[in-house]
Image 1: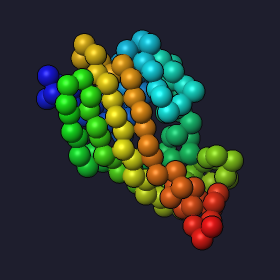
Image 2: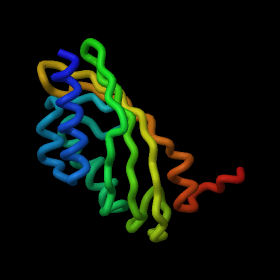
Image 3: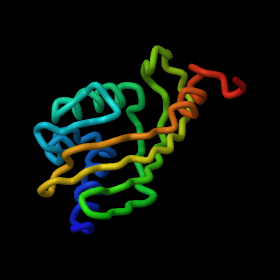
Image 4: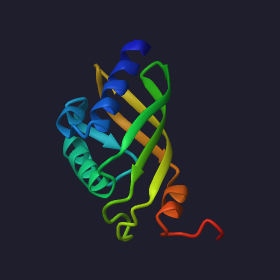
Length: 135
């Protein structure tokens, strides 16, 4: 079970990294619960992806590690991108960014039913000038 659950999460990140939001949305349940966003369900995948990729259209997503136990999969992910669109009110800077993230997924019947995301937002916002890394 753990291997199959890790494979679902791997396919999700592969689709996300290819900006294939239709494929990514097809890997989550219809009532997908994103505990880290107001965007929910399959439609939430489209909302989050559209916002993210409008700001970082060249994002490259790398899975650094996947751990699984029972119905949970933990992913450590690294994303490299260029800030090319508005993000959190910041106009495009052209800055290269590196984002580290830890995600926890709950897999149910071969689909992602629930997620918790913990990206290093302070580092990201520092890289695009929204906050000062010296604060």
